[in-house]
Length: 84
Image 1 (cartoon, helix red, strand yellow):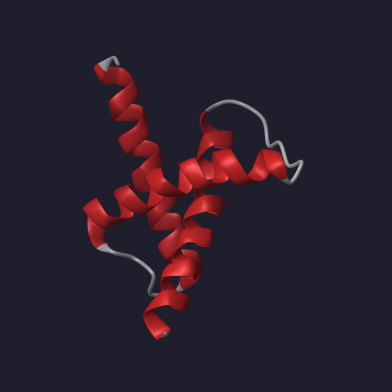
Image 2 (cartoon, rainbow, N blue to C red; image 1 turned 135 degrees about the vertical axis):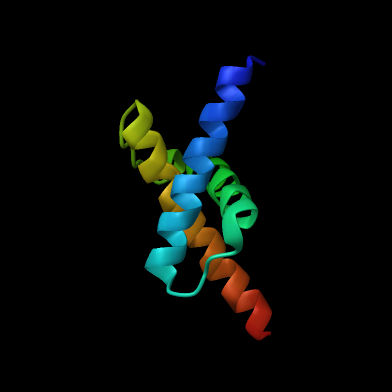
């Protein structure tokens, strides 16, 4: 895997995690935590959205949108687990 791909994953993860934290109000986990949430969110959205028939498109913006959707889903699940 090229270093450029890793850097792009980190950038998308950071943006998506930060945006998801802003959307969820208080769901942020700091820089490293937001990157992890964003990357895991991208995997969640990459698996879940096509199964629901939702295709956003390709490119950087679409990748960030997908990752944000997945990160919000992940933060919702984490909140439910914390409360239980």
